[in-house]
Length: 270
Image (tube, rainbow, N blue to C red):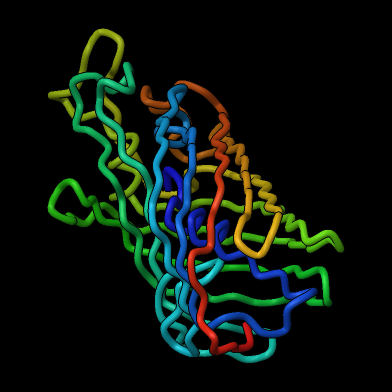
């Protein structure tokens, strides 16, 4: 999608330094400040820029969880395989933010919901490698939660925690969408045709290839700083020839700071 904002917030506000902590608080609450520069959509040459301060809450229950990677329900967990149902979000933008889309419908704030299968390939005290397979329905919040398509983004992650309690994550992924989702980003209907924007019938398939890195550092028991960067390519995408695709690739990035206000006395295993 345009970006998984909810997962960025949760991931960066609740870093799980498992090399040093075999148990974590059942819940923690705090405040998060963040600045995000995000591509308006894959293939856009414009970014959506947002700064905000929000409260956050992390809960590490056996079934209900809002932890570093997901907000939702965990249905099954074994030593190497986990199945959950979760949620994510992406920032919206107006047609005024994107000149090539001027006069077209705005891209609203999107909510994604659906199952995710996680397969842990390697896990040691300070390093892990895993594959995620999230399949999610997409809804437009600003259009009365109307159905906007389905996304599937298989992702390979590697994570490492250093001895000075710094957290590093690298990932590569391929984002696919059905025709409904492709239409949302790349379709140009007859009423939207202009001298610089010809009619286009979008098709389902590969939307973008992505590579990302994130890092975080715990400075004290209360304060954490973090940042992330992601580059995505659309030159091999199904709709690379859409008139709404302006660039073959682009960056999204953000930085932030969290303050932990309160934690549970009850400790649980991650």
